[in-house]
Amino acid sequence: MRVLEINGNYELSGSIRISGAKNASVALIPAAILADEETTICNIPEITDTDALCEILETLNVKVKRASESIIIDPTEMINTDINEIHCKKLRASYYFMGALLGKYKKAVMCFPGGCSIGKRPINLHLKGFESLGATITNHNNQYIVEAEELKGANIYLDFASVGATINIMLAAVKAKGITTIDNAAKEPEIVNIATFLNSMGAKISGAGTSTIKIEGVDYLHGCFHEVIPDRIEAGTYMIIGAMCGKNLKIDNIIPAHLEALTSKLLEIGAHVQIGIDYVIVSKPDKYIPTNIKTSVYPGFPTDLQQPFTVLLTQCEGKSKVEETIWENRFMHIAYLNELGADITVKNQTATVFGPTKLTGTTVVATDLRAGAAMLVAGLAATGVTIITNIDHILRGYEQIVEKLVGVGAKIENKEI
Ligand code: EPU
Image (cartoon, protein in one colour):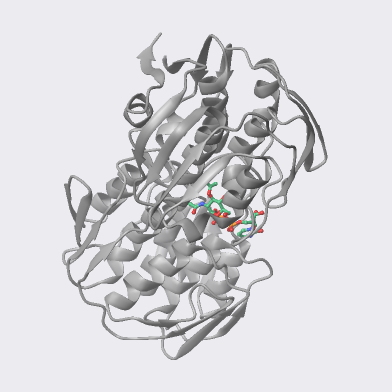
């Protein structure tokens, strides 16, 4: 079994360069098939989630070339085949092929997607959007068949500002006849990055980054060059690590505006944060002040940083509260934090953290990607050795995590035990 072994309680300093955003890349790769020519996307992170999507491209006879941080996707000889269950279940973002294939061929056949078990994660809003565009959806033996004679622009209101549904509907609508409007659209920076990519191919999308997105259908999408935005969640994870054990830890190649909710909470608890144009420098304070966080859609406090941030709250002097409003099952890290020495109780969707508590290394499980990140933050701060199992979850989302941390002084190893 492979594990991450951390010998904790070392001060971390130096610089960490942030990779391209996972949650943008996992939509950009499927989006690339909408073009009728080759596209090049640079700054795609080398993580297992992007590898899994490239495997799907290959099953669709799309040519994929990887050259360090760039990926060249050539769909000119593509064939629209069913995507098998194993590929669909490898990750959540396999569902972006539903919108992309529907948009390009007016037919997609695939299973319910996989991904972290952080809630029920229905896809009803995606399907409702496809239906509004004129698609019919049938489900045979766990397989969705989404097809349309013709896709026609429509006014779509999302009951919740879902990231996945907003992107999937954009993908399906980009070549539809007429104008599609998505109201109560998600506003995450990743959505803007996908819309920019599609527009570089010749799409006509406006309003991405606001709650109303307008898509005027076009007939042809050409090749283009595109760059993935920096990963705000990876950056945020390292900022939290900086606040936990950093001495002038520089988090480089970021867009600070994407991290405002986290930065303001770090300042509130007393961490030292210096903000530059494309970097932040974070140091741990002498004393941490308790605070409350409530996750919410962008630009609110991101749910994906809730789990790592909770670790930081264990060091605050007094009572802090964490309210999770996006995912109903995103407190699986709490039991393991308590095993490391934290004092946290959970009631309904709120965790109450009593601090400060000393953290001492033990064996813990990465139950999902960001729970794994939380274990990592805790292990780096804990005295003694922390062993994290189930590390596949972590490797799905953090590029070169061991190398990046070793580079700033952490004692961490990916090893077989
Ligand atoms: N929802 C529905 N119906 C739908 C779609 C969503 O009820 O059809 C609900 C969900 O159950 C959830 C809420 O709406 O309660 C938010 O879901 P959303 O669709 O916004 O999330 P997602 O697209 O499935 C992406 C990220 C997640 C991140 C969320 C929220 C990707 C691949 N995943 O998920 O990232 O937590 O947005 O920001 O982009 C992660 O990186 O660890 C991760 C889980």
